[in-house]
Length: 409
Image 1: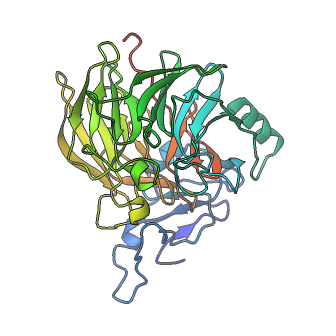
Image 2 (image 1 turned 135 degrees about the vertical axis):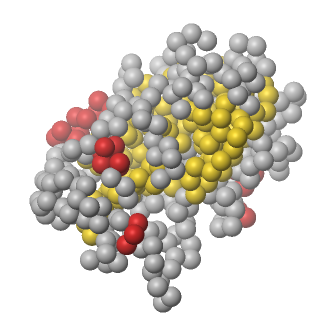
């Protein structure tokens, strides 16, 4: 044991400081798990080895080898289910092919995603666009069935998209049977909202590329409101901080776009770097991450936000109001955000994917020991995690929520 923390290593009935809440588990069914009682590290003592960097020094007091499930609260067990699994499904050590913009297209059982735009191993910069790829979940399932343990490396397919799509960073849907993407733009080419056909020849339609004649800074993420059908997106300066966009000329804000009238308006401001966005299924609450601590070529500043904020959505104006902190990430920054059907909040951080309850309690982590920006449910019980040079599939009990908006817009 270390600091009163322990991991499951055999098939035993586990009795912990959580007063026996964990039932008997079988190691042959479950991958490595680390149960961490917050009371065990609440006081570390004056001579303890405290962390001095949240991006490079990760919290793994049990020294469990990634990937594993790190559990802080019994409610995480309901998310995982009785027999969760956690497997690497694709990798390329020389290319950050799996970064952001994940969209699950149920009709073809494929997950679409973008490569890193301007970052390490992204192979994209001021003179080179990033790429959109897809992976077949049918092929993933087939590979996993043949290989009972260990990683598999399912081939990915790169899409040849229109030049109107430059540095894709966010995605959701399918929306009206299309991928709904936001781009950061590149050089003088403007950031935009784009619809892309998920079927060849992947034709694209630009919905928006300016704010009353002014270019956005570099669009980052997007979601469809589940009841009113409006599109909500974040705008921040990561294109500039990754050296492929000009210096910002507008504040970093959250916008609403009406796909019927094409009207666009600001619904929230006051962020350092607004990033991920996600709505509760009823549309009454929205979560926005602020990744201010991650500063691109300016370096990381641990005194700036690494937080997820919750807002109420005004039913008439759709403005975001009553801002409050949901969570402050302990590892890097919380990037993209997804929710499950019980309202739990998932976000990519420096150590993997972290999960919070709606009350803000950190429930647990899909601990990879490496940064993840985004993840997506590929139907109920399948969580695909994008980890730059790797992709993972966690098979769990949690169920997905619709991301396409209302049935009619």
